[in-house]
Length: 440
Image 1 (spheres, one colour):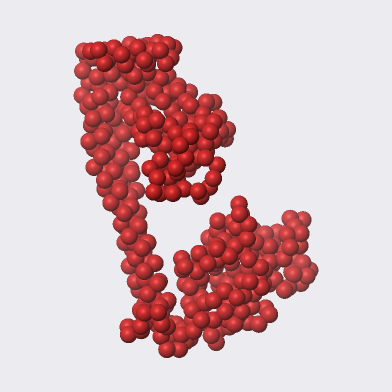
Image 2: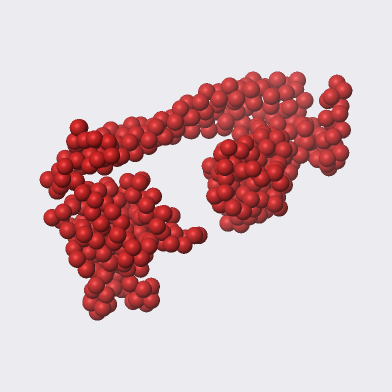
């Protein structure tokens, strides 16, 4: 909570609703993927990334006015001053209540406010707009704004460079995997479009242990909450595959239920795969000390033929972008993608080198990607430090520690009274003030 007694002389406390009014979009794009980056109208969506794509839709475009986009779900904000369209009903457009409001300065302060909403779609109206914001005198606001812009702009450039480096690392990772699965990391003289000697395209059904090699989890009704016991045979869930953590989870069944579902049991070195949602295709290995158990309905169990392919090679192949793309392209469902049926999944092809070469393949990839991991870790640390510095600058600015105060400046109390009066006049007040500015 902001203490007025700790504010610099001449400052006051306002509420966000004193400075910002909101527009609730009533017409917004409902398509999820129909964007074309050849057009110049950005589509803003809920979430922290905001710009989802571009559209050629001409209806419902908001003008290029300085406004703040407020996401009721995450309380994320974004300052925009370009034409845009809105895709989410959870978003609100915040505009200044008068020309006396420095909307970009308000936006900076909003970045220091991190709260979680339980009311979601009406969060701005019911809670956030009531929050306090320190208000400096008008002349000091401009000094603060200029100082923040000067300092933060350099930091933002650094952050952008770090994020660019992150993207370049992703490209490099994929290039390494592409070369690897073309055989070029372990076979320097392989021709383009050809596989090295001994490498083959196998169908998944030919790489697993017969009929038990691929097994989708049982029907949901087979594993109900009433079957769970405090300890016993573990029920492996989607979260185990998604997080690559076979130890997490707290659901167990007794010996009787385990024997009923023995066809769905997992043993050490089995692989489990997430079968639905945006995490479709996540894979994890059951370790040697993995608890005996069964898979639930959201998992696929894979038991490989160790004479043809190693778990480690298979996992690298399975996680590769080109293979994950193949899984999603063949998935069923629109809103919630689901793994294709076992019959079709068995037919998916995998590139496999001879078993004797797979270990070298794994070494070549891991030696390169481990360097990427270290660089990425360093970038993440630098990003966190840069974001912390950015936030520290903004906080100091609103504590009156960034620029000197001038006791002769008109107080913020008077400024706030003017803002409220102009807000009461509404659009007429805004129009009149703009006319006066133009004349002067």
